[in-house]
Image (tube, rainbow, N blue to C red; front, side, top):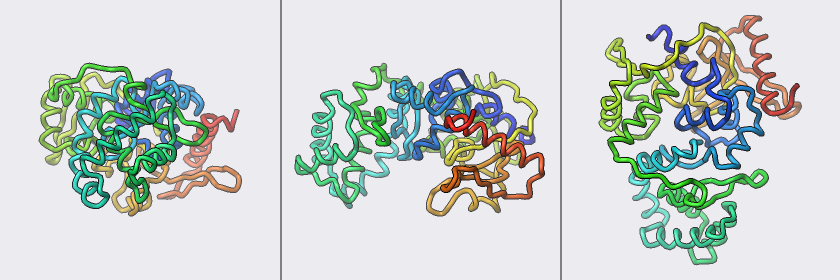
Amino acid sequence: MRPSLTAHRLRAHGISAPLGSSPADAVRHMAAMQAQDYHAALWAVGLRTADATQADVEGDIARGEIVRTWPMRGTLHLLAREDVRWMVALLAPRVQAANAGRISRELGLDATTLARGRRVVERALSTGTPMARADLYACMDAAGIVSRDQRGLHLLNWLAHESVICHGPRVGKQPTFVLMDAWVPPAAALARDEALHRLALRYLQGHGPATTADLAWWSGLTQKDTQQALASASSHLEQETHGGTTWWWRSDAPEPPRSRAVHLLPAFDEYLIGYRDRTPVLDAALTRRVFSINGLVAATAIVGGRVAATWKRAVADGDVVFDPLRPLEDAEHASLLRAAQRWRRFLGDAP
């Protein structure tokens, strides 16, 4: 498995072959996609969807078919609408438990204040009109709950982890918030065992082959929980052990195409950030060229499944500028330029 690990992952991610005809299909296949950087997340979805444009992805977000919220790791993700409730219910409690002491001790957001804040936000959003963060902060301040010094942000974050709110449609360049009950249809709660079983299958569907440690990193759950998740789904999975490490993937995973195709990935793409161990696709010595010490993850170009360069859009003229991590062959550089054209078509900048 390991020599073909990247080929299998490229196929699972929908990078070497599209995942579906709609952006929501791609997100559904991936289970959840990192979306702290909104515009990077749009391209992450577009990259995995046949002939999608940025307008197509934003259309699915505006209609609530794709929902942006905080399911795990305290980080914004995109999820298909029907996956929001069970994933937040399973994964958010770990984040809340880790943050509870700090927000109470350092920010003064004790249980009483959080409950008051919930009432304020629910009342503000009860009209059904999506509201920007600044407007919700103003409602908090008017009710005597100081929003400055990140108190408002942490209150909204807590409410999202409680499944009270989530992001709604964007208004211009601004994200808005809505009541989850008004934006996401109700669904029967899953028993924890069933949710863990589903999580393992869904993660490996879009990320396999992967390890227990990878699933634990991605989900924010404990090693014990992720071991239970994989064990419960094992009848639907394949596994191989090499050098003491066990790799898991779905039994129904399609065979990957053989290709050294070049692809431009956005910043924070799941192909890198969806795993604890990134060395299968990125040389350890080059990690700081992609993962900065302040938590940023660069946009990357991959050749044959491995990171060959980082890239960004030039401010002056909008051209794509590459920073190779190794010498590039002429054919590879030509492929990078073609991949950049695909990204431009996604944005609507190229025919």
